Amino acid sequence: MGFLNSLKSLFAGSGGADTAGYWIYVRCHRCGEVIATRLDLRSSLSERDEGGYVVHKTLIGNQFCFQRIEVTLNFDQNRRLLDREISHGEFVSKEEYEAAQARNRQT
Image (cartoon, rainbow, N blue to C red; front, side):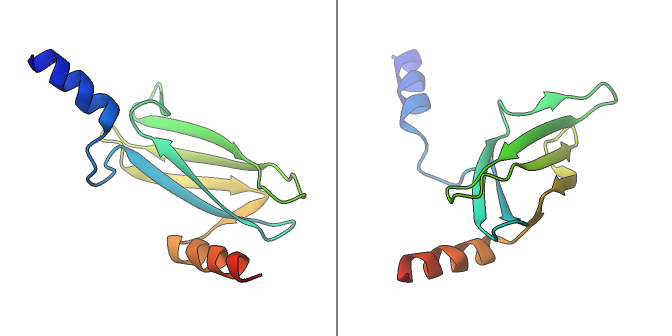
């Protein structure tokens, strides 16, 4: 029965804090759209030869700009962010993302 409960909890989710996720918020330099995406820290990261992890993401917004925003994130062995790079955009805070979403809902 323990195996079935473990399997059920795997698919049901915990409902608590998202400790395996890392959110990225960016603004496109071309059109100004603010985009959010979630990385799964258990499966999205690639091991680096020198230790730690890296992930490369290409983000494209929902508007008609279609600008590719390239993001590279480096993590340590404990999956804590060490540094980040971006081209064709800029990183923004979660609050800036939420404010942009609120403005979009009003229009």
